[in-house]
Amino acid sequence: MPTYRDEVVVLRTHKLGEADRIVTMLSRRHGKIRAVAKGVRRTSSRFGARLEPFMVADVQLYEGRSLDVIQQAESLGSYGAEIAVHYDRYTAAHAMVETADRLNEAESTPQQYLLLVGGLRALAQGAHASRSVLDSYLLRAMALSGWAPGLGDCARCGQVGPHDFFVAQLGGTVCRNCAPAGSARLRPETGDLLRSLIAGEWDAVDAASDPTTASASGLIAAYAQFHLERGIRSLSHLEGAR
Image 1 (cartoon, rainbow, N blue to C red):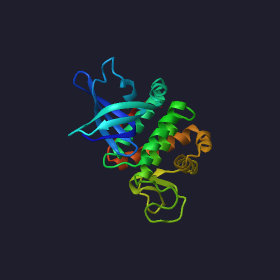
Image 2 (image 1 turned 90 degrees about the vertical axis):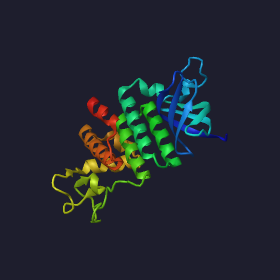
Image 3 (image 1 turned 135 degrees about the horizontal axis):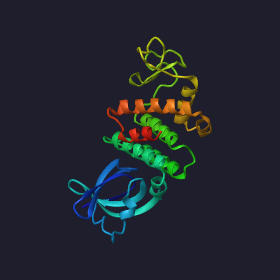
Image 4 (image 1 turned 180 degrees about the vertical axis):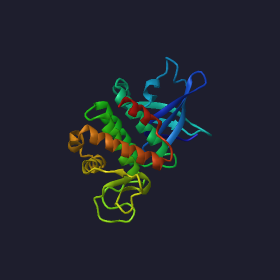
């Protein structure tokens, strides 16, 4: 059977039988892959630790009838240990891989892979608040999938902004005339933070106040979950921790 190699991020795993495991991965060139790692749960396994969630690896697989089979795995980035010992990093990482899993059900791009690797690396290093890393990832991942939020002109009628309302269902910020009753009010500092998060302007992100950060996080969560058409379960744990 034909074999191939690719760089992957491990998104999740499931037990299979007594010693095997099904591994769901986001790859650089082949999109989302579900493959069997045979014997990986045995203590004598050569690459079991390299196929845990949040790990980045170079893998060789051969094509199977229903699931591909992992033959080799070499570690490229070991982020799991640094993420798992911090609850905020761990829950943020779970929200990121859950989002990547949902977004790439149909197709993937190298940019989505690189964005996820960069996000997990940032979480492991702890240079920025975990929720801010997640928020920036969510905005960028949605943009790469064609759902970039409008943060300037009105997302509905195009009236020149900035505007004072944010409506996830309408695509971002909207003018007063287009905003439905009960729409979330967008403070200027929150709008500035949203633009900084999507642009990766970390000096501005790190300097934002806690209320502004919390407000932006709520809007981003609502926007992402609306366009994914179902909730991101891991976000509820982040809200509980807050």
